[in-house]
Image 1 (tube, rainbow, N blue to C red):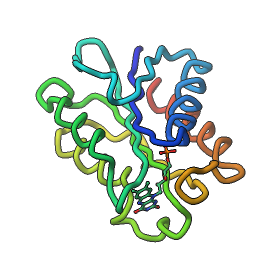
Image 2: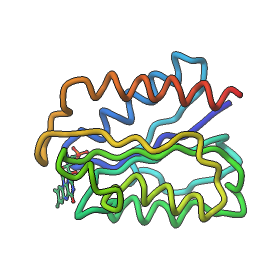
Image 3: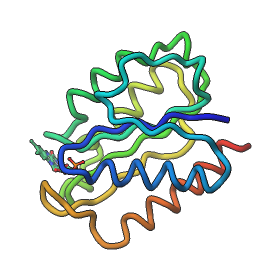
Image 4: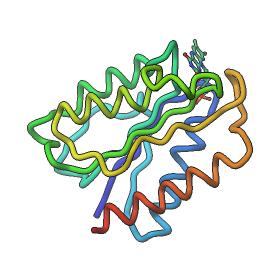
Length: 153
Ligand SMILES: Cc1cc2nc3c(=O)[nH]c(=O)nc-3n(C[C@H](O)[C@H](O)[C@H](O)COP(=O)(O)O)c2cc1C
């Protein structure tokens, strides 16, 4: 099984989450390629069995680069493949489900008929530059272990 983890970042927090997810999946024996969103020029579903996509939350939604990337995920090729979505955001944002980048990513991917493996992961960062709040990397790794379990089913 081989997957792709794609993230956007301005200050490195979302990259840290993406890398923690990738490392944890690898520790579970799953092959993963990890890419900064702007480095993915072409995306072929033939090359991957699942997709994990993450974005910083900006003005209550995903970044423009992640929105652009979603256009490369062709529903006819990716239908039924598993996916997971995550975001980084500030604590006061957490109560607002409609302001989550990850929920919006997940809605688009469900529309394209990909299969959502787990509820989205929303990771808390301090202010705009971070760092991640205490315990968030551990929570991310626990999420990735659960994801690995789902993917291996
Ligand atoms: C222009 C801008 C808009 C933002 N809007 C939100 C927001 O609506 N809700 C929120 O929780 N955080 C918001 N943030 C904080 C970002 O979520 C935070 O900077 C980001 O998660 C850091 O991740 P990164 O280091 O990967 O860029 C915003 C940050 C910027 C720079």
